[in-house]
Image 1: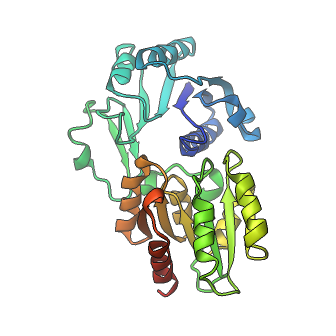
Image 2: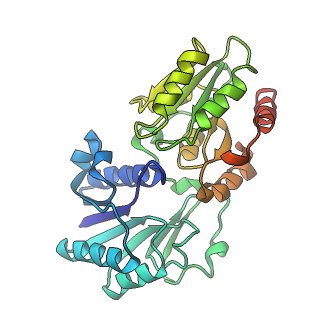
Image 3: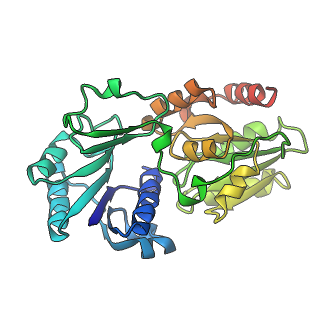
Length: 313
């Protein structure tokens, strides 16, 4: 069977969609399935993608629901016995009905935006605290299988079997990461707020994606203001050990939150996009994280207050 992934990724949208599709494709490849990626530009391919995907079909411009669904249908028909994985918030009901009319089957990530109602055969939503009752009026395919809650979060292979850090012996290190895409100034905001606050024996580990347009600015700021206090990691290979070496994290509200949780980290969330808000609040309700609002509205005072609350606990 050929598994066809429809995803999107960019420095503005973020890379959570692509990373979890990549992780799922990796697992399916190990099971003997053939995988195709549709959507992201080829510049976002990494070395592992060459061995995972038999084809990578970029689609840089979304013209319309009709045009994009027709493209995906053609690819599916060309690859007989195909199954679709849809991880793109632009896939609305009209798009889905076009697929259903052609007899296609698919798994769909529930983004709670344009993607509802949902006609998929399998619906995946890893948000903490979500229940099937919430989807009663959303699910149109009454035979659909629901995969709900963090147990169904798609993690990169290196995070799947990680042993959680119990933090009984603190390393006095603070992780700052806003995902693989644009950090929107979040890294410098956090560093400039917390560096004057923390004791001299504390250090910061900043993790930034290769496609973050602010990497140069961040590096220059650290050279001028964070000497011997901040380690900058751009697209690091050993992400798990960096996470495990830290005691607390400040992060955006995307898929990184599930990876931080797998490492046993408590974290402060500052959302950078609208679609992160509900998930951020859901994490806060678990007690594993504190959500202090959208980046553009967060004050230094609220970040300091939340940070002190976790450190003093």
